[in-house]
Amino acid sequence: MRIEIPHEHERPRPTGNNTASPLEPSEVERRKESLAARAEQNRGPAEHVRLVLRRSVSRTDQAPSHRNISHGLPREQRLDHRPRRNDLPQQMVGVALREEECKLLTVAGRLRVIATCDLAETVYGNRDSRMERDLAFLRQKGLIEVDAVNCRRDGRGGKVEQIEVVVLTKLGRDVVRQTGGLPRDQQLYSGLVKPREVEHDTQIYRAYRKHAEGIERRGGTNLRVKLDFELKADVQKAIHAETKLNPGRDMAEVKQQVAERFDLPYINDGIQIPDARIVYDLEQTADDIDQGSRSGHEDIEVLTAAYSPGHLRAKAQSGFHLYASASDRVSVTARIEGDHHLIDNILEL
Image 1 (cartoon, one colour):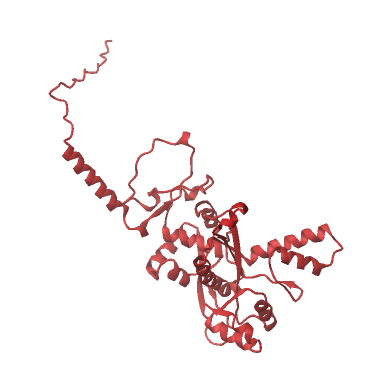
Image 2 (image 1 turned 120 degrees about the vertical axis):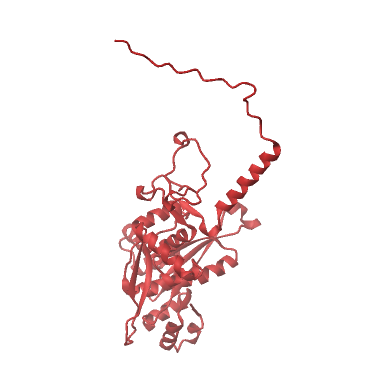
């Protein structure tokens, strides 16, 4: 049986007459201008910038790089930046986040719980519809939880008011840790704890915002937040270590020493812990060159009508920067009306 094996026909070689002529300089310039205009159009406004979560790879494993114009692609396919580390959760690889979404996640992680009304004002410029879309997307991706919790009643009757709040999930906390660009000593939180204290805890963000603005005006940079959870844990560890080292030592003496170590006030046989401590860096002066970077911290406390008079006085004597909402300030003032010098130091949220 004879089998015909087809042979590849010889491809005609281009002759001198078929050689493409180079582009004229004028046409090259026109194409450059066209590409530049198209790239500018694709870039879009700054508010649409995306951070795309991708696993980082070594240079030897990278495929040849190609320029990617992401305009018009689905949200999960837009490419921009890469996380700092290689342990991003698999389900988040390729997910694109807006600038506002990144800020929302970072704020919620640092301050633990944020009211959506505060997010709308500070992150979204009161663009509620955009915030709602982003919240829905972040919930669908499993990065946040949105809950409605009851406000304090403080003995009042009538309908119970509610407040809508946002907290990170554990997945959201991991994503912020890998992509948020935060200092390693910045603690991040997830989950809703102590629902009865949520209204008070949301006010910590408002106090932080007001106080941080003043620190930045005075030259403070690289602000970090330490909530009372972290401070209490550090204090308890220090007390435990000291009592273990010297079992017979007087506890009051131990607490006072630990309070001095953490620069916390020791009042009425107890260490006063603020709601939040803002740590920041200071600009070096000529005298600081040999001493390295300088840092400072300031403590803030949010007072509410739920505080007892004794608790209010201890906080007022602590030297913390005190804040209270307009309604709470009336009640707080009434409870310590005999201490006018303390009332004057309470700032309104």
